[in-house]
Each structure stands twice: as C-alpha cells, then as structure tokens.
Length: 173
Image (cartoon, rainbow, N blue to C red):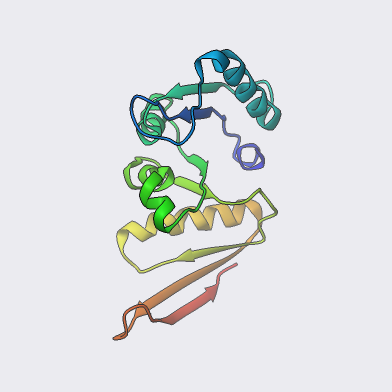
C-alpha cells in the first residue's frame, strides 16, 4: 500500500484459487458447503489488508493463467505477489506460481517472501545486457523514490562453475 501511495497507483487485488478440475491440490479451496462462507472470509481478510476501496477479484483456474489474464485485462503496470519459496520435492510437486508469472508476464513482477518492512537499500544485479537494463532502471527509480541506497552488483562466473567473482560493487546512492 505504501508503494502504491508513493507512486499514486491504483491497486486491484486478485485471489487466484486453483480449480480442482484443472489441477491436483492437497486441499479444497471452495468446498461446496462452505463456498459462500469461504469466499466471504477471503474477501474480508483481503479488505482488512487493503481497505474498502480497492477492487477485489476472486477467480478460479490455473493461478498462473488467471494472474496473467487479469494482468492484461486490467492493464496493470506492475504485478506484486508473494511466494512460498518452496524448493526440492514441494516445488516439483506443486510448482511455482511466482516463477510461472515472472517467466510469462508482459509487465514487471515484484516478488515478496516476507511481511513488508522499511527498505533502506536496494540491490541491483547487472550484467550489461539489454534485459538487465530494465531491472536496473526500476531499481534506480525505486531507490530514488524511497530514498534508499542503490547497490549495483556485477558478478562474473570463473572457470569453476558455481563460483563467482565480484567485478564491481558500487553504492550509487
């Protein structure tokens, strides 16, 4: 919310519930007997976080597809979402919605793993290729807007796979 206020941006809230018919999940989001109650509880919880004025959309289907479709339909400039951060067997079994959205989104995606906290510094990995320029530009603009230190980091992989050497580390702000 603070980020949207800082940039005078509109917030649309989307809850994308997996459809049982579309994919296997270990629990039922919308049990038929609790359908209306579950949806109302979800809406109430979301409203408690974002207020009464933000539009709330609850959709069922493949979460990655739903998020990408709604992103296009709502003509958003930025998607912000959380992630479990699963790895190993859990990631293999359940997949990663965040990764699917990042890989296929037409707009920048901001991924968060923890509750919001003050941002005092921003790390911007760079490799001087065009696709990194966009990320660096966002990092620079965000750092300026929130008065945070910006650090550009370039790492080159040496002969030893997995080992990197820091070529340049610059505190730009």
